[in-house]
Image (tube, rainbow, N blue to C red; front, side, top):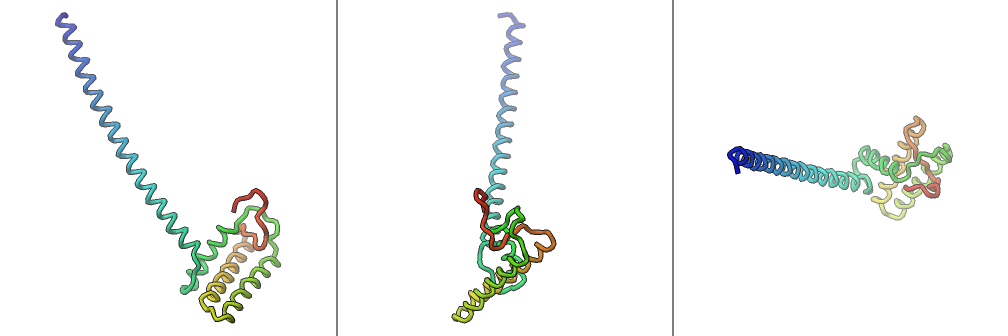
Length: 150
């Protein structure tokens, strides 16, 4: 093998090692980034779970906070993009139904349940107000259309 061929071989070997090291570093950087993203997603998932647990739990005590949280729960649970069935009468009967539940719970001696029903009634009022302002798609007392996921 000539000196020239030996030099070319050494250069190729050296360049191959350089490229191999750069590739390994790049792979390691990507793996670190992927691990960081996975960690961020786990944190985001746990925050979504935490907030969902708050929204989907009965609220009481701090009235305004409880009404706001319950109103959001109602919108998430019974929301729909369809306008059919959203009449003032539907809202009125929903309030009567929920208010009646509060009355009966209180009469039965269950003040905690009565308080919760007062809050759900107030939250329904908040959603009726949003509906009047065109800011909600809640459909009180109307079944979810077939094939639509709640």
